[in-house]
Length: 401
Image (tube, rainbow, N blue to C red; front, side, top):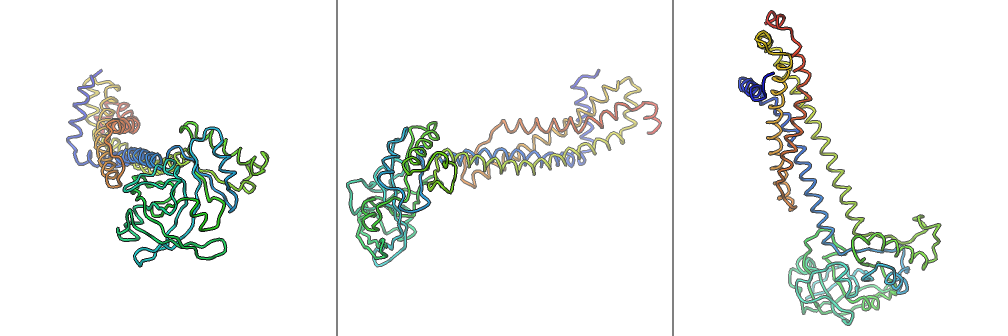
């Protein structure tokens, strides 16, 4: 039996003799592998990016909201605070306000929060400091509020007037001093909004006349304990609100909703996987087309080289030798196409990640994966044509030529 080095040299010489055909044959593999590698690498970048976004949006947080007003009171806050595994709790009251500064008025969402809100939501202050529970008419604004709404003229020490509607639909106006400006978050996935204004919760309750909360944010001891802590809060609140265990899974009977950091991560991972599967399906079609192209070209090659096959067999080459020769040729052309495709795919994914502002990498493992996949395709696509060549009768092959 001929050795692999000799068969490789013969296969390379054959491919060089028909460069255009070899290049067109490899093109299908190049496109398919590039699509698959770019998809896998970009998908990994997407996953890492969104996971970091979720991590930056808060620390092991659980958001509890009510489907109707006048449900979450101080009693429910105590229930949440005393639930097993809860570290911090921050109730929130929301309202829409007309904010006036230097003769200019804008309608902006304002939130009444406690000082624990900063820890729960990982708020970062760019200028000044966050409000405390001892503050009265102090406010913290989002960076985007200062820049977009008031043309960067609003900062610490500025005094703004806010008007909200109370329970009787009457205007209530108060003047606040800006105590701090929040940084624009590195994460696009954030709790609350950075185009808003935060004030002490008791002040906003006094202005609106509301003695209940819009939502509550709590943090668990760790990410591992997140789901368990959420379950503890659910059970405690259900008992407190008089909802039986039987109705626990009945959404219409449970007036609360819960969202935690782990849920967001799971949703993000599911979204990334869906996108990857979709793009992989498209890339797989290209690979199938490429493999069919290799098979067709190999069939043509066998037909064109009938005389060569007859001569080789007449010189003592066995059917196994001929099989190896053609199979090696198929593997080489697909392997080269796979290398080029994987390289192109990595370059595309790198450029795409940079343009989208995501973590960009150049994992060599993907390069080897692309080559491996393409060589497997080469073997599968080349086996049948190679077997056909190997089974040729040398006398018939020479006569046909």
